[in-house]
Amino acid sequence: MDNSRRENSAEHSWHLAVMALTLGDYAEAGTDLTRVVKMVLVHDIVEIDAGDTFAYDAQGYTDKEEREQRAAARIFGLLPDDIRDELLSLWHEFEAIITPEARFANALDRLEPLLGIYATGGGSWQKPGVTLAKIQKRMEPIAAVSPALGDYVQQIIADSVSKGYIRE
Amino acid sequence: MDNSRRENSAEHSWHLAVMALTLGDYAEAGTDLTRVVKMVLVHDIVEIDAGDTFAYDAQGYTDKEEREQRAAARIFGLLPDDIRDELLSLWHEFEAIITPEARFANALDRLEPLLGIYATGGGSWQKPGVTLAKIQKRMEPIAAVSPALGDYVQQIIADSVSKGYIRE
Image (tube, rainbow over all chains, first blue to last red):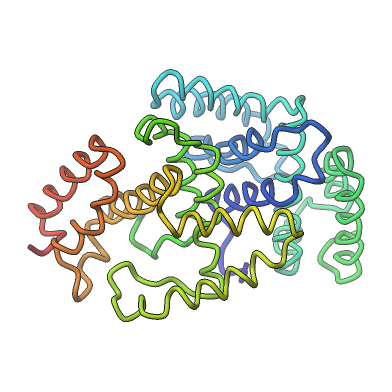
């Protein structure tokens, strides 16, 4: 978090896992936090083959799914069948964002970069095409899972606008 | 793993957690892998305050425990009481290396750097004071948990000696 480089997927995934261990009170009732931890540990592993697609890159998103499906088949396919099936299934569940576990994992996946970007003065919010409206839209799933976390996000966004980290 | 820098604690902890998800068949019967995952996610978090002590640094080890106990009290103490108690207890369990979960976590904590150092041509084995005998001693707990993983470690060590990564 010293702005010398971007956070990598291993660091990001570790952060999400620790957030799942510590912010579980903000998950919807009945969320199985153990499955959330497993899910976030492998949620970005497809980036080994498919690369990282910047959250606000509309063009990159056009073939993101196809690239990632191919990567998931190859990478999880290296594992013994039972473990492959479990982790591939968790990855599909994360991508679908339907179950409470996937919804919480998805909320953490949006909250963690927000905290990192805020802590480092708004770095990647300065890229072309990133606007307050797009950031707000990206953060919507957090409030849907937890109004309290959603309020916290709004405080950070308001402060980021006032500090010039985010363009209105 | 390109030798440009050392692996950091977040990357190392993520690696251990993924190894716990994928190498569970090598754990002792009855090992609760969910507790192993949680344990490895927080096992090195004390390094935020206490710093990293190099595995073969005898002098650094003289005050390692005191530094880390102080760090654990402060860092886990930032959390709500119930989560603090759970994670601090897991950290103490990891340090004591008595339960099957801690023994497996400890084995992974020794195996993962071995793989990294081997994959990058033996970097930190070249430091003064690191010998084959010390490396063998450090790897002993792996074979104690899993003879199969222990055999794998011996193959890597033999190949590392033949390639000159380890001094005999």
